[in-house]
Length: 168
Image 1: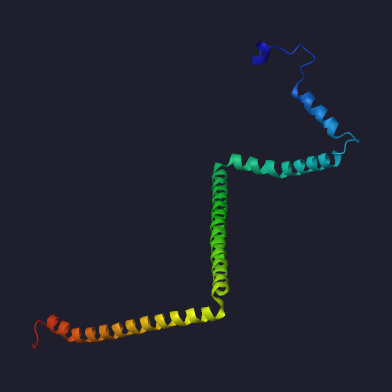
Image 2 (image 1 turned 135 degrees about the horizontal axis):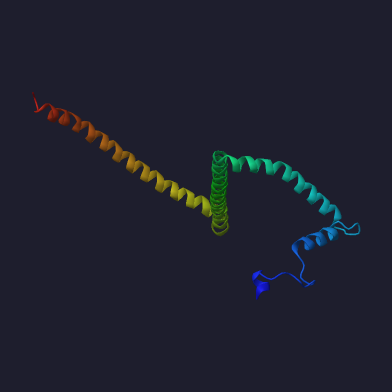
């Protein structure tokens, strides 16, 4: 039980420390016959380069909490703008998809209408609906003229009512 809790001293040679494990893995990856050797060297080189740039930056940020706060704020703003951009892109995707489905659906409906009615039937239907639209247009145009006449007749009455009487 002491071994599990970390209280016992390691006497057994079968239990190795993590430092020995790291050297074993390093010797395995850096072995000249290993096919992963170029990748391991590249990874080691990149980690060394990142360490030379990142550690001074992290040190200066941790020593000055104001910079850490500003950096955290900038990271939060950047992430929130990225999330907002993802949201906008997804909404635009669905809007474009709905628009394309509607467009191609109308086009397919028109093609089906042409297929079932034929060119003469389509011309007949269009003529009928143009007549219906023309009749409705004339009806509402006449109603609008009547409304203008009624409004022009009511204007002198309203002006007289505002003055306080009919003839004063």
